[in-house]
Length: 299
Image 1 (cartoon, rainbow, N blue to C red):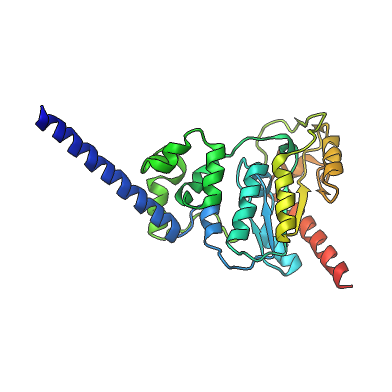
Image 2: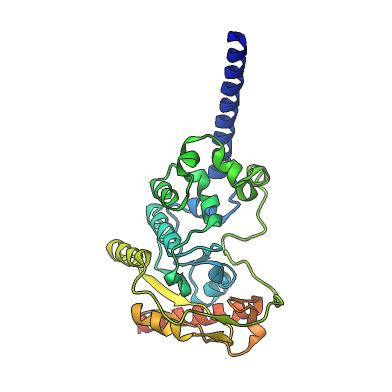
């Protein structure tokens, strides 16, 4: 019996050692290999200068072509939009940008009905896993994951759970310096044509009194002297209750409201997302507005 128990214990110890080794190896590759997602790319930018950074959900990721912004303004731009992110995620990214000492002139945050949301982005959380030793990231995960203890304390658990995003294939590609299909120096991930889903949508008739994380963003940016500009990307013409954005603007008076920019459906992939054709025009519109404001300051 003692031999059997000793045998089982030796297997468990060997297994834990293997898991610990794999955990350390995966984390090392993600921190030192070629970036395979936007968080890895962000963490590689410490001390760099990027004039304009755009934060948001897919309504930034699939909408802002940073290269067009650069061509119009003559300044460096970066699309840091990540699918399904919300204000609490934007707040984390803002803190990371500050901690990494990335020098910026303006940080643009796309906000819309997300003002009334308080969820979490599983996609973002998966990208954060190699960096759990970072205090801001650890605190964010503690707030947004139900299995925080396991993520932090059980070796390799986080990589098993999020294997679909940060598993072996991604680690291997990063380790052998295989470039991603996405140009992270731009960050724009276009959608082409039309999704086939009817181009109609609906926003809430009412808006909440406040969003804790928007307030936190405002307080943090004021404290750190970071110039944050909120904007709303276009919705398709058949979106109901678009006056929601007017109500949002009363809460965020400096909001750039592009929600009704396009009156034709030709520029939309679906009701909430522009196709590549629309994104190119919208990016040019944003770039022109930035340049106009900067030129007015010079004059």
